[in-house]
Amino acid sequence: MQKILVSRCLLGQRVRYDGGAHGPFTLLERWQQEGRIVPLCPEVAGGLPTPRAPAEIAGGQGAQVLDGHLPVLTVDGEDVTAAFVEGAEQALALVAQHGIRLALLKARSPSCGNLEAYDGTFSGVRVPGEGVTAALLRRAGVQVFSEEQLEQALLALAELEASEGTSAGV
Ligand code: SF4
Image 1 (cartoon, rainbow, N blue to C red):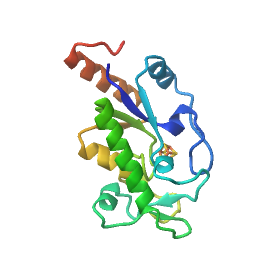
Image 2: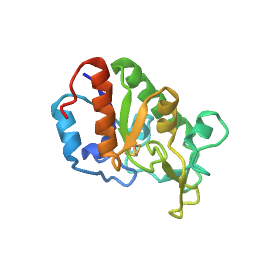
Image 3: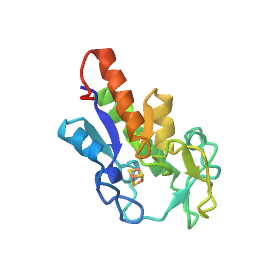
Image 4: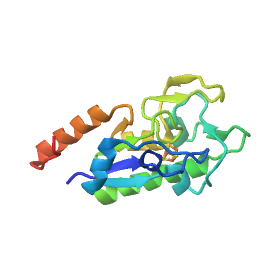
């Protein structure tokens, strides 16, 4: 059975920077019952507290952080790059451990966002981009979806399991 890496905040766990959470999502509840979910909050795993100061990447490209070209900075100007990279590496370790090929991560997070990010000005401006963890997973060949793409994630799971001869229950 395919396991799926899921952002902890999407599972109702209060790990967001502001102490909040998201959900419930019916699909994630089903995946939990099926025992598919490997939960991770990369920022907490990387050593950051909750609540914590919001952080952004200038230009919103997590890959540039991975390559050492840009830092992740909090709204107060603190450099939290090391924690973000550590969280991404823990995600990659879980992917290797569980043979994960699919992730469902929180949209627009500087760690988890897969298609869009905030632009680093802390003014709510969105740009095409991705978070640090999402970028590392994508490089590793993991398909990364967000909670705004639940149907696509379900289809991708069905395709993966069909190719393996197991059932995703769709
Ligand atoms: Fe943690 Fe990712 Fe959720 Fe942010 S978006 S709280 S890093 S799981």
